[in-house]
Image (cartoon, rainbow, N blue to C red):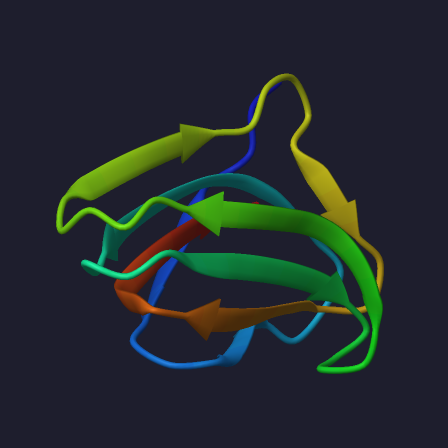
Amino acid sequence: MSCPVNAVTLTATGTVNGGRARLKGINYIGTAVVGSIVVRDGGASGTTVLDLATPGVVNSFDIMIPTDGILCETDIHVTLTQVTSATFFYE
């Protein structure tokens, strides 16, 4: 059985979803400077569940998370550094 997938686009640090959810994928646009996407469960000071380094290339990248994705019990909070925009896919 499959579940509906939702999408949220952020252009700055913020909350993707305010409840329990599974992160399934990310599409982001990087900048000419090396940066990062840090995903936390439990707000800005929550547990880090994904720390993704972004290359210093102005381009669009797709990150697909295999199997059931990454489960965040409380919420999905993201810190964007040197990322122009990122779309997060979750269920």
